[in-house]
Amino acid sequence: MDSLQKNQRYFLLFCLVSHQLIAISCAIYFYHQEQSLEVIFYITLTSAISCALTVFCIFKHHELATCIFLTSLAAGMLFLMVSSEHQISAIWCLLTLPAFAVLIGHCPSLMILTGLYFTAIIVLISGFSNKLLIGYNSTLIMRFLFSYGLLASASMSIENTRFALLRKDQPDNKIYGTQDFLTELPNRYFLEKKLEYWYQKLTTESRNFSIILADLDHCKSINDYHGRAVGDLALKKIGQLLSQELRRADIGGRWSGNQLIILLPNVAQDIATTIAERLRQKASKVSLDSKGVNIQLTLSLGVGSIARSIDLDALLSSTENCVCQAKQMGRNLVISA
Image (tube, rainbow, N blue to C red):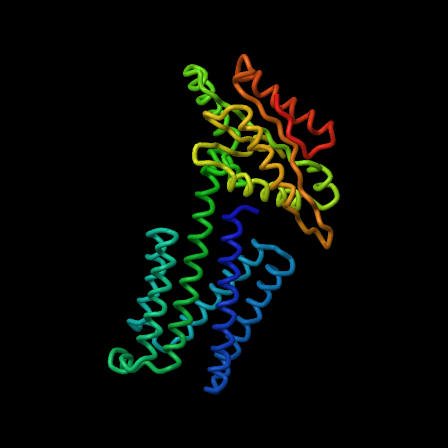
């Protein structure tokens, strides 16, 4: 599940919970006012939202929960408008604000709607309401506040869906750009460009350039026995360690499935080997807990340098061979070309 989908679900959950609380509060209020029709309406609305919450939380069906919620909002608005004693009252014109606020954008509209809603609450329950809203009783004010909340939520739900569709049609920078979506490190596309640049530049200038390939040991076993989520977490932790160990001039990122790479401009092979050994030692201190089972992480690393390679392909090939050799020798080793 990507961040956009998570945000959509959090937004829906917020709407469901907040309106459930509002509906229950209104039902209690009108019960004490002995207005049975209002009580029945809010109890029915509470039941509908409870149904949507059940579908969302237990059955994990986001779309169906959204449909139930929006249908409840529409039914609630229809009831409030038809049953109002002041159907053409000026206060109801304010209900057009949420629809217009949505037009200015996703995040700004959320802030504006929230601000307007709390402003309305302050005005309507304060002493100013007696002067500004002559003839509006407490029942009408409660109706308006709830109506405003309903329409604002409906408008935001529509805007949230529109925003999601727009984002869906645009390439995700973490997938198609320069960042790996899991480790949040530079991805292979970015790394290949940097690798070509630094190789050509430093070769021409006869300067040092080294690379380190780090392969997470037992990655397949971790995925098979503990689940892919645990395997992803292991790779993410190694990625975080890599970020902490890099100098400002170094470039590190995800090279392939369970492999990370570090580009070391102006670094000789012996120094690169020392850096790799330090990384190996720190990685061996990283562990995960999966259902009570401690998983110790280790790395097999290969070190290569342009001083011992005729071209870029040879550099990558020799470094990859070093990683394979480290695996064959028992893993958790650093092998230099």
